[in-house]
Amino acid sequence: MASGLKHNPDAFNVTNEPFRHSPKTHHEKLWDSAEIKASQVFRIDKAISLYLDNKSRYDGIENMRNGGVPSAVVFVLHGRESTWSFRKHLHEGSPLTGRTRWVPKGRPKSPPANGSTYTFEESAEDALYKLKDLENKVDWSECNDSLYNIEKYNGLGYLKYRPINSPYLWSGTNHYTKGKYVADGKYSSTAIDKQLGTCAILKRMSDRGVSIGFY
Image 1 (tube, rainbow, N blue to C red):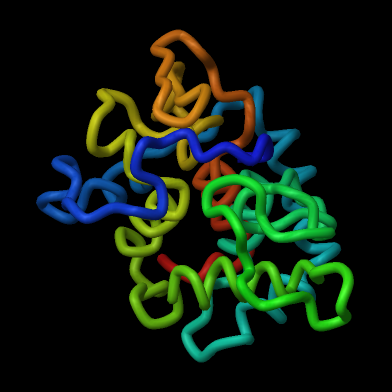
Image 2: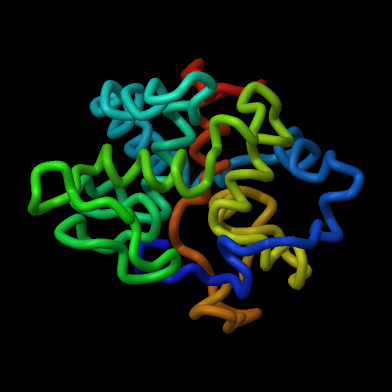
């Protein structure tokens, strides 16, 4: 989240398979039936323009590893965690002037290469590849695997404990209306997530012919 809070009780520390991920077609079925709310199309198109303007930076992060996280996925994670600021950590949105302040706290473990401030690329490499190992554990060409791991990046509290689809993915689509974690481990059934969901942006990208990595 842009606030720096991971609104899930078990973000970054999940050991049990969530009940709605068996059989493992949950996310793909949602993707296939997702419709972007008309009221959000303008916001999403503005976001996509931002992606296209900065695509080389996101491509660079994808290309840090063979089988790296697709640049479009890096972008939508960046939006949720840091509101697309290149001055904040990709992990959780705290400033690059120090290590992360919130969950996961104290990342990256290594000091900044320039001795003072982390670059966004250093932060992204740590969040995606050193902490999460997302180049080896995910088939980014496969829809369900990709979406499950996008949700897992934020935490699986919605899948495991709540009767709604995660707004981290589905805000801005027909698959989300209300309900969200408003603090670590604190859920409100009436709060509304006003950020764009990652899938809302990815779906629009796909509709416009922008590569997102999976089909």
